[in-house]
Length: 59
Image (cartoon, rainbow, N blue to C red; front, side, top):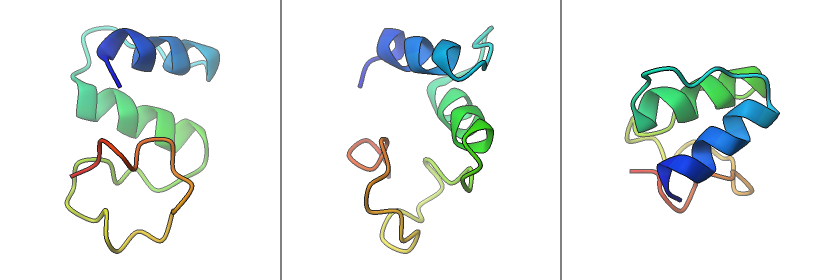
């Protein structure tokens, strides 16, 4: 997912993107959704969120 797409999702969730980097912005969206802010933390295999919107990009 590219940054513009992430910014659009963030905006729709009420998250201001400002100068946040991709990982920070995705984590902010995850928090706004009430999920664990785990994107990019290496927990992709352990998080248990199989339907996560970010799963494909997560490392």
